[in-house]
Every structure is written in structure tokens, then in C-alpha cells.
Image (cartoon, rainbow, N blue to C red; front, top):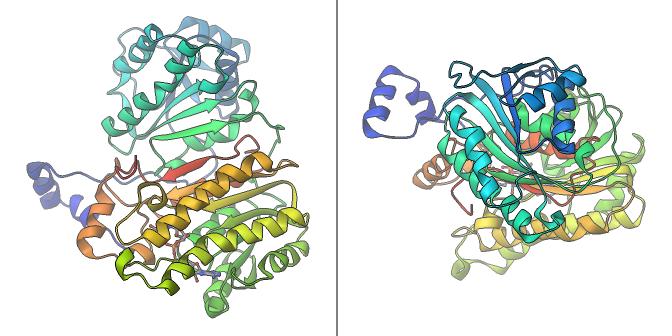
Length: 462
Ligand SMILES: NC(=O)c1ccc[n+]([C@@H]2O[C@H](COP(=O)([O-])OP(=O)(O)OC[C@H]3O[C@@H](n4cnc5c(N)ncnc54)[C@H](O)[C@@H]3O)[C@@H](O)[C@H]2O)c1
């Protein structure tokens, strides 16, 4: 649905009114156009201490041919050793504009060391371009050997969430906690977060764990893979199917039989196939396994199908309660259980669930929906440690996304939902789809048990 306010904000009269009333200006966000370059513009990289993690970042910046700058001579010489073309920033240089600021904060070991955040970011805080990226890499607090180090690493969340709110201009900010010896699993996440694929993801805490390193063709990270997307006939599901196909997967588009015509349209567009099936059917897991078997078995399963039936609890009928829980939660649980117990996934399989910000913050009139979506987070959290054979499970939690679901919300609530985030606008289905594609990537073996919000850093439940 068109965001009329955003269109108005681009007109001369709109600019005048918005400026004088102090209203938020929603800037057009840059979105993915092509796999190269990963990032268009200069990257300033710094480190509290040069660590193994810093060296991995240098290798990744080299692999993506980033136009890299440093403030520190020690990083410059490390970069030279691996052949990374870089520039040492002269002191007080205020002319260079950066598309990304990346800081390895893992060497911050005490509260006094936190000053290094200030020292790196303060001088360049006004030099980040629109749709820019701020990424702090950190050591998982649980893996720190003493309390002071863990506390200092935990502090980074508050820093990054504030930067996300301050920098504006569509600039995103995240912390990536990297587990002990998991540096080599960082690349898919750093590429995603630096790129225009992550435009509506901000203020997030991501954890990278140690796992088998799986190399991919970065321009087609799902080449040769088979994906099933539920609820694929429209909205977010349609965008997921398109993005996974763009990344090289054969996509089996699943939706209820009543959606057959739209399902066929979506599948034909991406050379995928169709599975008309109600996910609450007893045999849904077996049907998915059968459909994927004809394409080499299942590599990626995206549990996107979902419904809302909103009423306050006092007015909620038992049928509406049960329907929402059954479709949004029980069906996904049952399908996962069937597939995991019956060798339904290939090695390095990926399960990606779609939760919602309502499952994190709760929402008036959505006790049934929020219960189901909070449970989806639980499904990810408690399934992740049990998975074997390189299989992972993660979830996205969309905020306000422009779809038929949100178009049905009354005007005033819809406008509030759209604006109450650091981007001052709703996200697009493609923003959710890109985040799912990052989790689904064969290279994302180190992401397991994450829940990442695609909400433009919504104020709700933050
Ligand atoms: N739109 C948003 O702002 C938003 C925000 C947070 C979360 N979400 C979640 O994202 C997902 C997609 O949302 P959307 O906005 O694209 O919704 P949508 O209503 O446009 O699409 C949902 C799809 O799921 C299908 N579906 C429903 N029940 C099914 C069943 N039993 N079996 C198979 N398919 C079934 C529908 O036919 C439909 O095609 C949902 O899980 C939703 O809860 C959406």
C-alpha cells in the first residue's frame, strides 16, 4: 500500500510543512540491486585491539573489495599484509563521507575501555551517508573469562541502540556477538549487514556461533538448493519466494488450495513449483517432504503462513483463538517435528520462522496472535540446541510491513505503526524476505537460535 505521507514529504510543500511542524522525514531507503559491490561507498574500520576477529574482518573487507579507511596505523599494516587496499585517515579529517563504520569492540575489557567507543565514533558521527551502516563486533559476554569483560561487552547493546535512534537518514546500527573461535562464521552476516539487503533491520543483537564453515558462490548463495515457502501466494510470502529464487533456489510455493491461482502466478514467475496444501492438515509434513524429494530433498523451510483474528480477549470467540494458534504455531511445530524425525532435511538444512513484533511487545486485540508469535520465538530458542547435521533454525520478527494485513488496520493506528520507528516508515515485504534469505543462506551455518526484528528499530517492545 502506498505511503501517502512519504510521497507528500518529497514535495516542496510537504518539505516545508514537515520542517515547520517538526514531523519525522521518512527518507527513501536504499535496497538491494545487485550482489556487487556489497557496499557502495567507503568503510571506516577500527578496533579496540587488533584481534583474530579484526583480522577476519580485514579478510572479508578484502573479499568484497571495500574502499577501506582506518584511523589506526596498526590496522593499516595488517591490511597491507593481506593486500587490502586501504587509506589511513589523517587526523581530524572531516571531509571523507562513510557508508559504513565498523568497529571491533571485542578488545574492550573494562568499563574504562568503553571510552574507545567514544574515541572511534565521536569524530565521524556526522560523516555517515544516508542508508549507512554502523556495526559493532563484539565478544559474546558468556564467553568472557571475567565479569568486567562480560559487563563491558554487554554495554555495547545500549550504545548501538542509541546510535540507531540518533543517526537518522536511514542509517542502521547493530551489534554482532561472535562466540569463541567463531570468527570464520562471520562472513554471511557481515555481508548482509553492510549491504542494502538489511535496510529495515536496525538496533538488533545478532549472535554468531562456531559451526562448520560452508563456502558459497556469494552471488547465488542458494544455487542447487530447494526451498519451501508457506503462505507464498501473496504479501511477504511472495517476496520470500522471489528473493530465494533470485539467490538460486528452486522454490516450492505452498498455500491453501483456495489460493491456487495466485500460487501458480507466483511460481511461474520464478520458475518454481506449486504445493496447494493447508499447513494444518495432519499429513502436511509428509506432503512437504514428498514435494521436495522430487527436487533433491529439502534444504530451506520458511514458515511464513500466518493469520490474524483480532478481538479483545473479552470478545474473542474460542474458534478465533484456536484458529490462530493452530495456523501460526501448532502447524509449524508439527511440520518441524515430522521432518526432523523422518530425515526430512538435507545436511545444512535451514528452518526460518516468521514471528512478529506483537509476539515481543504484545498488542491490544491480539492476545491470540501475540501468544502464537511469542511461542514461535520459543520454538526457535528451544529447537536450536537440539538440531544436528548442520541444520539451523532462526526467526524474523517483522514490525510494520506494508501488506494486505496492515492495510486492513484502522487509519490512526496504521499511521502510528508506520512512524514509530527509527526509519519513520513501514518496511516492505522484500525487507523481511532479504533477512530470511540471509538466515537461509548455506553460508549462515553459524546462525542458530537468533530472532532478528525487521522493524526499522520500532519503539514497540524495544
Ligand atoms: N504484514 C505485517 O506487517 C506483518 C508483521 C509481522 C508479522 N507478519 C507475519 O508475516 C507472515 C506473512 O504475513 P502477510 O502480511 O504477508 O500476510 P498475508 O495474509 O498477506 O499472507 C499470509 C498467507 O498465508 C496463507 N495461509 C494462511 N493460512 C494458511 C494455511 N492454513 N495453510 C497454508 N497457507 C495459509 C494465506 O493464504 C496467505 O497467502 C505472517 O506469518 C504474519 O503473521 C506480518
